[in-house]
Amino acid sequence: MTFEAFQKFIADQHAFFRTVKKQTKKDRIFARTIKLGEEYGELCDQVLASVGDQRRTKLVKAKTHDLEDEFADVLIVTFMLAKAMDVDMMQALEAKIKKIKKRNNKQL
Image (tube, rainbow, N blue to C red; front, side, top):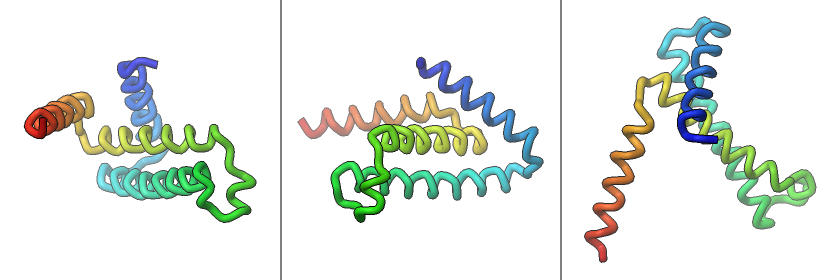
């Protein structure tokens, strides 16, 4: 999948949820922020399971694709939240990468 296709998916999902759930912008931002916390927690559980640092009942249920799913969920919800807040993620990523590269070059 290309980044452009991913952005289109996010835009489509954003539009879908705007029509399905009649929420104010503030409510949508709040809901996506809470959802991001939930997804991050699930990712943490899967990371712990993948390295064997989870209780046995969770280790038995853990599968490799679960870890991949949780990474994807965190990214999708993050981009959905950014969309709700009118953040241009391509621009934000480019600016952040530029800062990181500049900082890394100073450390060399």
